[in-house]
Length: 336
Ligand SMILES: *Cc1c(COP(=O)(O)O)cnc(C)c1O
Image 1 (cartoon, helix red, strand yellow):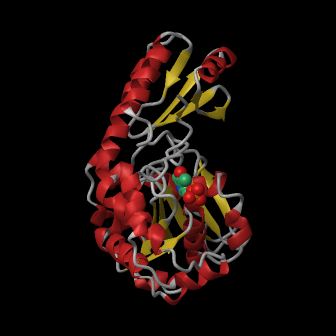
Image 2 (cartoon, protein in one colour):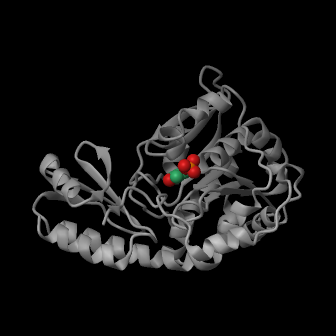
């Protein structure tokens, strides 16, 4: 048995999800004639109390499109040093939008309103790039699945309103945050200008991210998606998987969170583990003193993990990580 804890993207569609895919009604989505895509977009927009949504093949493309909608070449966005848009989207911020990133030394991937204020370039000082956008991430990926409070978002919103900056949320794992905190998605809709939410992380669809926002900012989104090569045709088959995942997999995320917490507890009892980041959702980031012996041990037990560098390792729980695997995993860890 292989236990794959690299990421929550490794899940495969269940038989029931495949049934939903098979039964989907489809059309040409470039003409906006795919009823299943339209249904998914409307449903997600409504959940967050926003009026417009657009289905993208990937989270990276949705974030990149959002950044393009908010900025002009030469401008600068503010994000945490761990941000996915900065670290893991292939340099797309500069490639697609001609924009630079001002990095904030935040806490577990999260930044404060005061840090946003401190990183805004004075708009009349023409020597430095014009700050026009703030990108936040929830949950934070490299920050170990940490969740922001709504209060912090509201404080940041006061700053972005005052300085007329756009506010985008990379919500690849926003579903995990909603389950972990009980926050109301409609509050997010009132705070952010644009939000991307992935269906292919914890929710387990094979692909798809929805970008939501209000019509004023989303007006050009379909053009930008086309430019990025993201206009798809009968993609309702995949949107059907997303709708199925919202109905059936969204509530299951709390099981992933419970198992992640149990992994963290067991890890913290091992002498080789020097630090375990607090676990709030489905990501466990920890440091080990003797990386070679520990990772060889995991390799020999068919356990796959992510190596984050500098002795930092990561486990991510997901719905293909079964109870049986979990019991085996805890046993293997305890025997190290
Ligand atoms: C996975 C992820 C994305 C999007 O990734 P894709 O692989 O392009 O779908 C964006 N932001 C965060 C924080 C992520 O974890």
